[in-house]
Amino acid sequence: MPPSIDQPISENHLRLLRLLDTKPELSQRDLSRELGMSLGKVNYCLNALVDKGLVKVGNFRNNDNKLSYAYLLTPRGIKSKAVITAHFLQRKMAEYEALKAEIAQLKLEVEQTAGTNALDGSSQVKTALATAPSNRSSRT
Image (tube, rainbow, N blue to C red; front, side, top):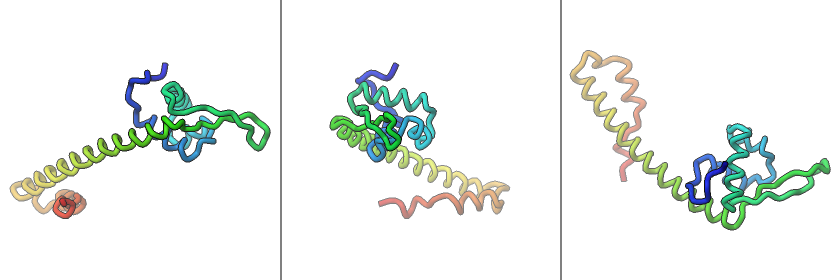
């Protein structure tokens, strides 16, 4: 059973909303391929989005005169996609900042270890320090 209307939308739901916004004519199989998700998961997510009123399913005839579906974002779906995207971006930015701080701490630990340990001068330490992003230039 799909999540209730009150449950938050997952990253998979957001990815699906974003793809449907640009390619509403894709079949569930095509959506599955593009998103790298199983067909069952795509079906589950689509049903959840339909249940929440964010997506509507429309029938149309394609070039081979076969009945196909178009998954269209509703006005509520368009608005929700924007809000969800903003929240997702905030979360990812916070994760990014936390990761930058962790990298800086690890880099400091490696530098301290290199100065007091037999690893000083080893290729592993030099490689780690050379490839670690500098946190000095990224601060504003």
